[in-house]
Image (cartoon, rainbow, N blue to C red; front, top):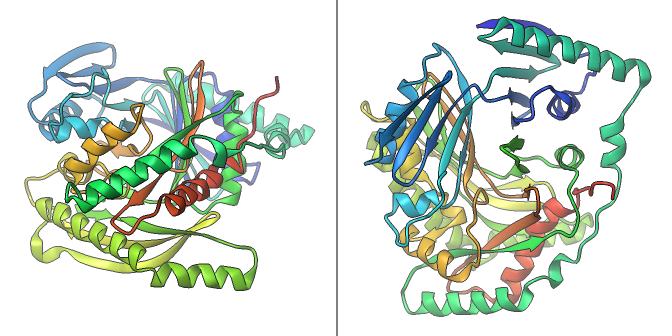
Length: 446
């Protein structure tokens, strides 16, 4: 592995990551940020594609295929077939993978349920230090020369094009789109809950946008104003997404400690101090929100208990208020030591999809989501993850995000429906969550 380390002369790691992603010689890229530490993958060297019937491994120009019988088994075998000694990859798990994992019919028809990409060049930006690594020295040199030239050009000319674009305004009437249909779905779900079909379900609504999103400027603007658990922006095979994840679904470190962070319970943050205290008090004293959170934590415990030593599991915190941009949530964190024969893919299998994006029980709520929502969710409420050759995993829940293909641009948000839910309040909650994204979206110039 060839590595170059140098200073970030722009003195803004977020800005540097955006400049590299937007201007590099590689069309495909992914940026994954964890508390100010940026990982950037450029190009596609190798990949693993988990589909409905088989897993395809493209390893340094060689293609292999294995039949699927068990998700974790297939992924464990697939990652062993990547020939590089040390590597890090970006993974994209679609929500519809949950239908496969829970054997829910009709099974998803998508050819890709999870894709793990090992880039040609990987870049780390931490505390104004930039590290470039690649198994190909000429590729590492090319990116070093590109960054050196581009950053000096920006510094000498004071050319803040992304920053200027990020200051434009966005406006859409989110609260007017799909209101009646969504409220009707909430009422039907409450009826289902009262008839004991399930305890909780998260129903979402998609809002199409009428113009193209300036992805880089929107991500820059949103990250400057948000405090997410993780953030990301990517352009892979023509599909674009960016967002500010409020929680992680699975974290597995080098000591084999598994961690998950269920969030449930939401209130807006007000700039008026008295109003803000009132909203916070409502959240921590609302029996509906407390019950919703408690059952989510209980399910997360049951799931982590499958892959961790029972006596090692503990709560780091319970019902802690965490602020994520313009909203606050009730949050808890569970940790445990993974059993000897398990891997990160076993942990992912146990915890995916996130309880806070599906419901309780998971299988019945996933079935209800399929019944009530018109479109496949795709990456929404799935995961974007960082995974490496040492079996370390960091998987963020894909919420508070915006999405774009060659023809479509959209945002999406949901709310947790329980016995005490009302259509009006749940619709209002989707508006609050959508505004955490839409307030920062910038359109492309016509």
